Image (tube, rainbow, N blue to C red; front, side, top):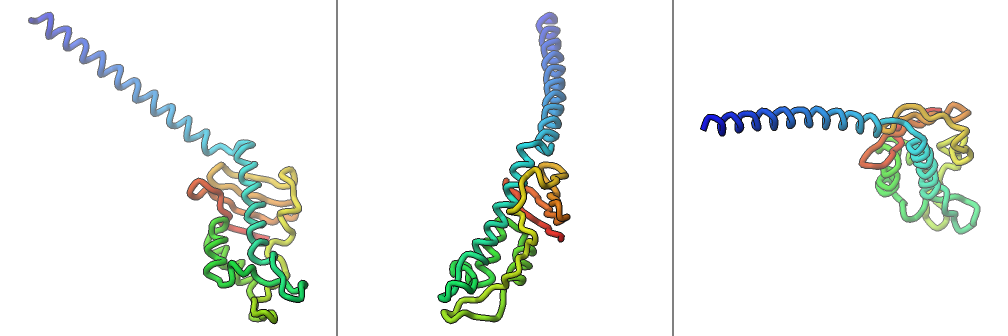
Amino acid sequence: MKKLLSLLAIFTLLFAVAGCSSNEDEGKEEKAAEEKTAELNDAAKSKIYNSVRIAELKVNEVFNKETAADEETIVINSSFADESSASAFLSKYYSEDLAKEMYAHYATDQKSEDGKMIVNTEPFFNPSFLDTTQEDVKIEGDADKATVTTAENAAYTVEMQDENYVITGYEK
């Protein structure tokens, strides 16, 4: 009986030691995985750069896509005729505050003959980010939050939110 209890005690100690050492290994693996995800590698830089480009294209979709009946006057896209729908759409690509700031920039009190709001033709992003290449910009930070700076010193702050990059700041 003593032999059986001794064997049981030895096995218990072995399993306890093995269990503790595997927890330490898992902790090290988790830390390494966290460091990898936050690292700003070429793939992350590419995603960040493309997110800024797509976001500006979405602004053009709302404010620079449609023209009035005279085919010269730029009016707001009829799908986003009011501030709430335009801001809700742009909030997928920009912070809510920045989306509202853009709407305020483009919105005017003027209406076209067909009743659509005439938009301010002065671009919010000047110069346009669409005129750049990835080699033209400087991307700094990490994969969760980065700053994209153009040659003209326009700075875009980009953050990861809900698995997507969202522009949370813009400075000229």
